[in-house]
Structures are given as structure tokens and as C-alpha cells.
Length: 467
Image (cartoon, rainbow, N blue to C red; front, top):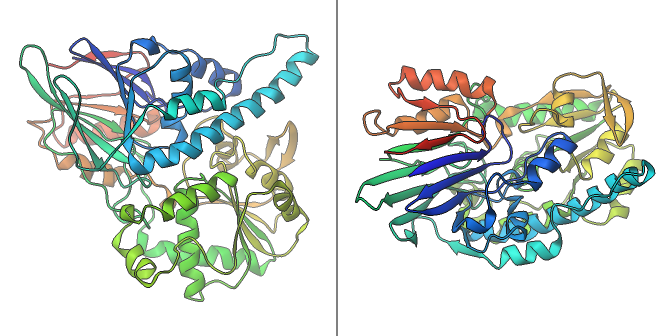
């Protein structure tokens, strides 16, 4: 039994881990690597393994850095089944189609430049047709239902509390010699007190653990303070007649922000200004959230669902799909809140809103999640005074604020509490993934202090044998 760390190793993007068990291969996730355009294209296009030799795949959740390269996997010969929760399957239906559309548009833009330079044009990673082929392979599985996917290999999904449908994976494996092990894969771990989503169901009694460390050296703001901080922040910008621009992932973060704003409006803690969710994908994703109330927590049920209210809809909120309506926002000067994708500001309509608003000191760019290295969001967060958007230089005059509480990832304390539910003498080895060095290495030291003495931070392409 071996684990090969293909992607998501020493980085927060492109999650992909290959299990070699009993002569079979099982892929844990197949995410898109997101970063510099040229580097990303080559990494995503070329797999370190032969996709046609992979027997099955397990997907923890629908975020593109975990699922986004599945159509390319299928395009290159994968024919096995893809196991995911029902909500994840529903989200992938829209997210992978949206990704294919963006791939085609992006390559169209790149090829225009290549033609001018007399260079050979390139193809998109995949097309809508490849997405349709991939979706035929998905199998929806309920939480806490044990599934045998190959001889000697069973798995169970546990609610990871990250986005709707997100799951940790517990694999029970028996090799050809009768040796048995329990392998845990956390996927992305949510926060115990996050709005809307349920508290993570921790993987316990395991021998090996593959664990995310996105915020392994960071601490989120206390939850009891965050609602007032958000209200104060919005009120401050409104008083100076500015706009609040929120780059947010279409799935998860957008719905959390809408939920929080709904509460603040209902409690009269912020004035009645318009709120726009400007993302076709977010509109579709929100409808999927509505169709899966079984994934939501007790507070959401108590405040909204039990009275038949929509957590993601209120009078002054408008969801925008049409391009014309999106463009109209550029001409408005009244105070408003605009939530738009993508969260890392590497594509989508948020780029237009940043270009139109980032040079006005009355406005605020509010970041509510993590941004990977080399992304526009990270450059703005890091305090760059000038940034390039659509090839043009813009001065960052708008106020920039980061509210890390809204991250759907557990912080250091929450990650440590997750691991503590396992005994050091039982848990033989922990593999830290989905985290950059400044997050994962300090977290590794904390684990060692707790008595978990065998903790690895795998490099891409590394292979580990499981005893």
C-alpha cells in the first residue's frame, strides 16, 4: 500500500493524491492548480500518472481546486466511477460546466495574443463535452454509508463542515496478506461554529491521516465579535458613501456572506442599502444550497427554515446573471455591497468591479477568505500599491480589509482539536497537505509537541509506503 502525493502538496491548490492498493489505483480528488497562467496550464494539462490506469476516484467536495481537473482526467482516459456526496454531485454539475466555459474563454484570449506573435495556438484543458462525459461517472453517496469500491477497500463519508456536501473520507483497507489499516483523508476541514454549515464530524480511530493545513499557523477572530465587526465595517463605508466590494467564491463563501447580511438587516444593524451577488455561478449554487437543507446547521433551521424563510434571499438583495445588469453597476455611485467571484480575483466579474472601484478611496475591498500565492487577491492583501487588471495598471486607493473569520477552513487551534480526537499511539503517521510552508511547518511542530512524532510534509511526486 502506497500514497503518491501528486498535487496539493506544499501548496493550497490542485489537490490530488493517488493510492496504490492491492494492484489497484484510487485517486483522491483531481483539482485544478491555480496560479501563474503559463505554469498552471502546463501543470493541469499533464498528469504525473496515466489516467486510464486509475480504477476509481473519491472526491471530498466540489471546490475547483479539488474537482476542477476531473473533465481533463476523463478526456485522458479515466473510465472509473467517481464517488461523492449527493450535494457535491449537484454542485459539480454547475461548477465544472462553468469551469469549461472559463477555460474556453481564457484560451480564446491567450490565442489572440499568440496569433499576433505568430505562435501556435493552444487548446483549452477541456470542453463542455468533456464535462458531460465526466458527469456520467459520478455516483452520489450519503454520509455515514459504508461503500465497497474495490475488493478489500471500503470507504465512508463524514461531514467535513466546509461547504454543503463536503466530506472527510475514512478508508478501511485490507491488503492481499490480510493486513488491515484505516486511512483518513480530511478533505478541507470546516469550522465548528461556521454559519449555515454543520460542525465537522471528525475522523477517529485511524492509522494514517492525510490532513489539510491551509490555516495551520493562523488564528481566526472570535465568532462572538465578528457580526458586530462586519456591521461596523459596512456602516463606516456607507457613511463616506462608498461601495463594499467583496471577492468571494461562488460556492460557500458567497452564501455565508448573504446569510450574515440577512441577519444584520433583519436586526437593523446596517442601513437598507442594495446588495448584489454578481456571479451566474453563485446564483445557480445558491439554488443548490436551498435544495439541500439537510446539510445546514441548527441555527439556520431555527432562524430561517422553521418559519419557511429563505436564508439566502431578502428584499434588498439582487442576484445578477445577465452581463448587461452587471455592467450597469459600474455607472452607479450610491453606496452598495457587491459580492462577486472569484475569491482569488483570478477571473470572473470581480475583475471588472475591482477595476472600476479600486482607485476610489471611499470604497473598500473586503476579503473574506484565503488567497494563494501569485493571485491578484493575494497581491492586494499583501499591500501592493499598484496592481495589474486586464493588462492595465491600477492604483490601490480603496481601503483593504481582511476578515479571516469567514474562511471556511479551520484555524490552528481547530485543526489541533481535530487531531486530538485520535491517540498518538494509534495514529502512526500524519501527512500534511493543502498548505504552504509558512502554515504547515509550524503546525507540524505543534503536532509533535502533542506526541504525534511521525508527521510528514510531502513534496510533489513523493511516495510513501503504508505498513
